[in-house]
Structures are given as structure tokens and as C-alpha cells.
Length: 147
Image (tube, rainbow, N blue to C red):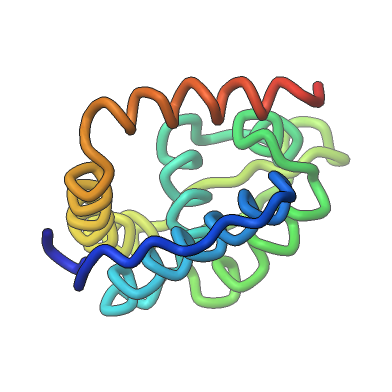
């Protein structure tokens, strides 16, 4: 398994929420380590990937597509605007903002995608096909807790 040194099971907490948060941090750290050579964090990769699929798009519609609130999206977009990977322009309505990838953003996303593919394949192999399918089902069920 590329990028995964070994299997070290951790003792779970009786608190499901704590276990989910711990697992989330571990998975985030794993993807961050693999993506490190690209200079893009996993949250930035996710934002760029979503944007690539729906651009040009308003900030509100991008937040909805990503299932995050506008405040979080704006905070996550700021460094990407500052380094020139995305641009935000005024929309047809002067109150709306349209978000688009720049050429530099497309290039950075391409580089990061190769690394993300490696991370994804490693995690898929680590978990196994059956567990991945169970995981997808459970995550969807957990996301449905709130609308």
C-alpha cells in the first residue's frame, strides 16, 4: 500500500462522535501528507475540484454544491485567490460574485489530482472494497442527520 506504513488499530472511544472526529483528522492528515508536494491542502483540492465541475458559479451555488456554508467557503477561497488559483468577479447582478479557476488553478489542480489519485487508491486498498462500500453507506446515513 503506497503511503501507508502499516496497520495499527486504535482503541475506539465509547463516544461515536469522538471516533468519527478522530478518524476524520487521521484521514485528513493522510491526504495532506500525500498532497504536500503539490502545495495544496485537501480542503483546497476539494474546493478546486468542485469548482472545476461547476464553473463559472456563484459563491452561494458553489457552497451549496460543496454542502458547506458560505462563510466557510469564503474563508477557504481567500488563500486561493491570494495565490492566483481562483478569481472572483462581479456577476450579472452586482451583488453576486462569480468564481472561476485561473489557468494557474487548473495547472495546480492537475498536479494535485495525480497525488490525490495515489492517496485515494492507497486508502481504498487499505480499507478493501467491502469496507469502502460499507463506509460510503454509513457516511451517507450520517450526513442525513442534518439537512
